[in-house]
Image (cartoon, rainbow, N blue to C red; front, side, top):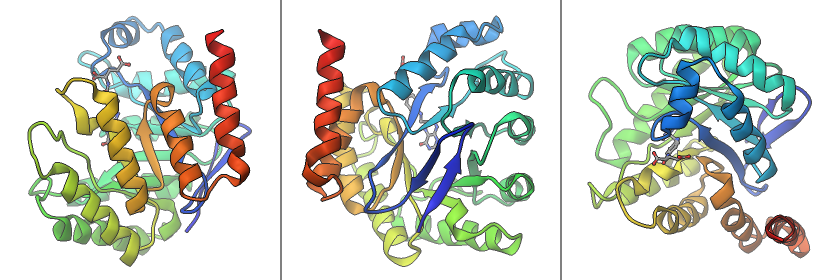
Length: 283
Ligand code: THG
C-alpha cells in the first residue's frame, strides 16, 4: 500500500518496508507559547524557522497546526502555508479540526497534501471527506467517534473500517487514507500503549493501509519524554506503523536505527549519513 504525497517539488511515498516517514510536529502552538504569540501577531518567521530546521533534521512532511486561542485558523492556516511554500519543497500535512480552515489551506497548498484529520463521527466524515475528495488530497482518519476514543482495539479497528468504507463511497481510494490509531498519555492510563499497539496490528494485518501516530502524545506529563517516545516508536514500527508526527530533531537518529534494524537500509547507508550530518552540525 503506497500513499504518495507531493509538495512544491518533492514527493514522498509512505509504505511498509520502505524508510519510515517523519512528519515534523513542531509547527503546533500547543505547548509552544512563542509560536502561539507569533501566530497571534501574524508574524510567521518563527514558523518558517521551525520548518527549515525540521526538514534539515529529516522531516519528509511538515505538519502545520495553528490552533491556539485567539487565532482565526481560517485566515492564518492558508497564510502560514503560503509563506512556507515560498521556501520549502516538502508536502504539507494540514492539521486542524476546522473544515473551513482545511478547505482554505487546501486552496493554497501545492501538489498532493495530507489532511489531518477526519474521524468516525458522522459530522466529521460529512464535513471533511468531500473536501479531501474535491482536492484529490490524502487524509488521516482518527479512530474515534461520537462516543469518544474507545478503550479497546477491536472498537478502534471497526472505526477505521467505517472511515475507509465511507471514503471509498465518495471515491477516495484506500491508499489515500492513513489510519491513526490514537496515542494517549501513558502516564494517565497504563493500557494506553497496549491498546494503540494492538490497533496498529489489527489495522496493518486486516486493512493493509498506512498507519500514522502522534507519537509524542504518549509521554505527556512524564520526565525524559524522549526516552519514552523512542521506545514507543520502536514498538509501533515493529507492529506496522508507517509514519509518525514527531520531532525530527530528537527522533531521526532512532528512526534511522529502526529502519536499519528492520532491513530497510542497505549497508547502513542512510544511518551513517545521518550520523555524519549530526556530527558535522555539532562541530
Ligand atoms: N494524531 C494526529 N495529529 C496530531 C496528533 C495525533 N496532531 C497533534 C498531535 N497529536 C501531534 N503533535 C504534537 C506536537 C507537539 C507535541 C506533541 C504532539 C509536544 N510539544 C511540546 C509540549 O507540548 O510540551 C512542546 C514542544 C516545543 O516546544 O517545541 O509534545 O495524535 N493525526
